[in-house]
Image (cartoon, rainbow, N blue to C red; front, side, top):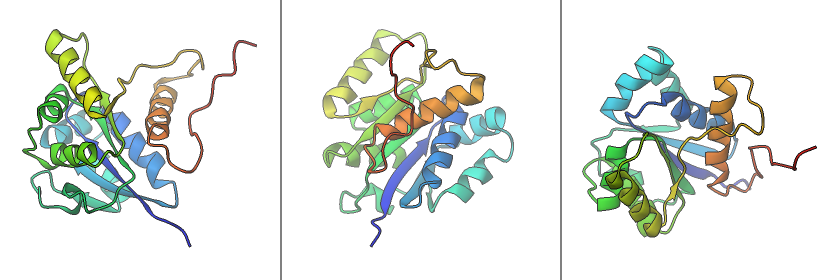
Length: 193
């Protein structure tokens, strides 16, 4: 018997829409994973601008269930709905700050809040630079609460050929942080040869 692994993927309006698309693509390709998708209103604009006018439709097709941002009564808004984790890719500073403050005024923040209170993995691909003290304090707060802050900083040791390779590696690293029982997706570093 195969166990299904529900994973919440949230896409917010920060630059880096390709990260959310690639995370959803990678997760949807895993037979046992069920993708629960939430897209903020600003993310819809960013997706169209950065990933093309069909990006939201592509995301919809990857999701097993798409939830409305305003539906704070959705299944993923309750701790009684078992998930294996959540990735916010990209994660705007507005969203990260709301999570840090516990301001669950939309489904992304409510689902993140549920993951924290239930002690489930929550990966935030925080997307902003440079960072001011308020950003840093919010990152510390969510880390102390149990979230994993993973700014999408490219690793150059693997000598990426193009932006798509960078995005793919970052998506794989974020998914690996969920600890899925499938083994690592991102290639491991084996030292200089």
